[in-house]
Length: 314
Ligand code: HEC
Image (tube, rainbow, N blue to C red; front, side, top):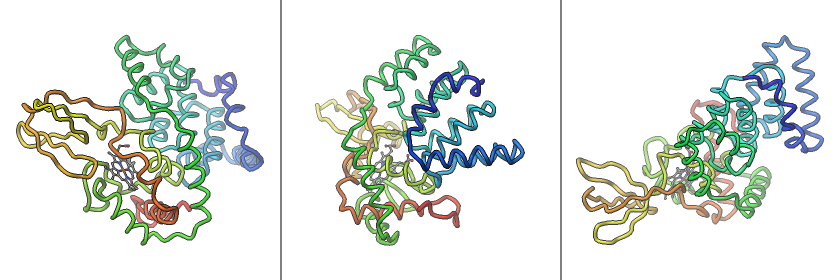
């Protein structure tokens, strides 16, 4: 993959770096660092920054830009970062990847597998590029994804920005946040051993850092894990149910509804099961929490690090 050569032509830097003085200063620092250190050390340092949720999105973007100028990055590095990155960084990574054929194919695979947000397809340049490398069948799958993607909601973007500022200024307590979690989230999510199975196990989720966490909690349809999509079931008796459909014993299927209630259905009673591109996580749930409770909840979620002893991103 020749990322270095293509980078300037794409003009990505100019578009994403209208970010003001701090970013410029950081950029300068990076350049100095890269020049002063032996190339391998500089590169390792930059990859660390790119992956680190404790760095600001601006510095992570900057690290990506510098890395792309140095030498091609392995596609696996992109995919790994993308899975846990906030939207702005996902977009920049996707633009990078889409530039050559093998990168575009990697990206195509990740989008189709639900490993990164289908909203990337709303970016015309990315969609066109993926269409070019897709087979006929994959092209159809891409169009279906794009048709069904839930668009960026301005109100949610504003809410995310407000809650980010509020959180950084607030005096939070993770212990109180745990109580908020137990009241509002535990029906669907497990932490340690307790909790529901409608949503993913949240152990280690704190590792993603503040920006991605805000997006995951306030805008659940942005990155939907394909194993946790909402299914609407039409029964042979004409009933309509909605929730997460998972296999049960023998011919049984379990439908877990939004309240965490399990409904046992026999396969023969299911007329139709329509899998939605939307998350089974209710939108607005966390957004409607009182600000103080929300900040404590966030502080708690950020303590859920895989490795004990990792410093909190705050
Ligand atoms: C009705 C069930 C339900 C409730 C209640 C719920 N969630 Fe979720 N949540 C889900 C599902 C399903 C997913 C996975 C789909 C997705 O990625 O959106 C998810 C995803 C997440 C993720 C991203 C995890 C990952 O691995 O990508 C986070 C973080 C999260 N929820 C936090 C919360 C918090 C905090 C609350 C309480 C305020 C909450 N959820 C309440 C169902 C729920």
